[in-house]
Length: 171
View (spheres, rainbow, N blue to C red):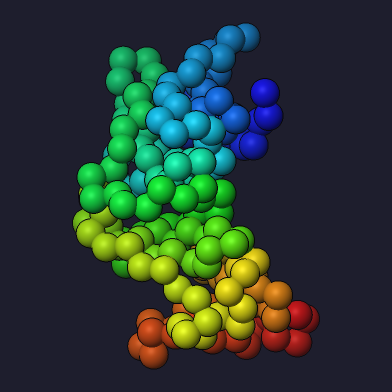
């Protein structure tokens, strides 16, 4: 099957695969879970060994157990979208996720990232230039949004997306 991601976390090799989340041990792979299908991406959560996963069916957690992990749905999760692009704002306890045909999601978590408090879909009314093809990334410890009209950032004071001044001359 298709491999989407290979990551290292706390000395363990994780594979985002069409069949789900895999753990590599030696020369074997072990399926850790496939709630809703495949896994796109892994992101370490602060303060513990849990790992956030962007999957074909939204966000999930990998919880350490014995010498591996188990997959767990996140309490409060209502988003059942394929989330390939996922970044974490650790300071604000927010996960940003994007879907190229839906928009950008801001997902507010509790302080230890164990439960989702609120999910909000952002589109053109919040300042994105288009409804489609918006992608979230972290560059130099800053969350940015690549759009068809350039690079944007989220202005927390204005609660709007704004053109990112640093990248405007380039894009």
